[in-house]
Length: 214
Image (tube, rainbow, N blue to C red; front, top):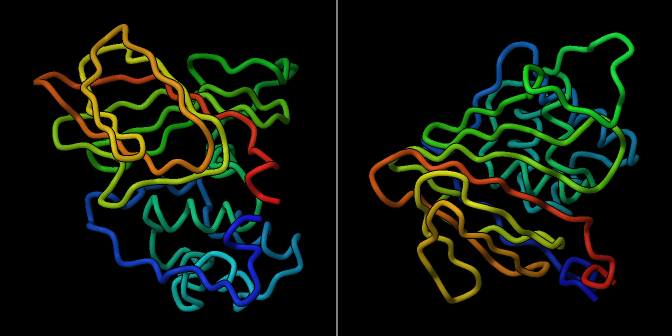
């Protein structure tokens, strides 16, 4: 049974993230409306979503009204509580192409999220699936954030260029172009730029593991 299913469980309040980790969306990407639509679809009140995600009601309200951009950690917590993948916030900015196969993502139509020194480029097609593919562009000073990330899904990837430090659990290693990695669900992990040139990492997130949610 996951912690979130334990009787009386309340997630730890999320602390404010440094400005460099805030997501930047263009005006074609209504993040607030996506979150609000998913919440209403799940028939959750702001208070109920706050309890499930550990994000305050006030912050949720600001996110839904697009008053402020959520941090990576806050948005991840909210989407996880709503049972939605990160890719749902990419799609509104993607240009529709008539008669384009839904299993294809063209190189010139990849939605991008800008996060300061980190940029996420979506590779996954529009076809409904639980496998997420993206390229992380990590500049000097770029990282996954101040706090480790956790998510109940398999992760893997390949360093395409440059170098990064990858921490999984309590072990950290330096990876260079050509090195690959894979690790299991719900393990705290983080990454940060290494070396002197920008790094590019193919990042793969598998389907959420039901075994780790029961």
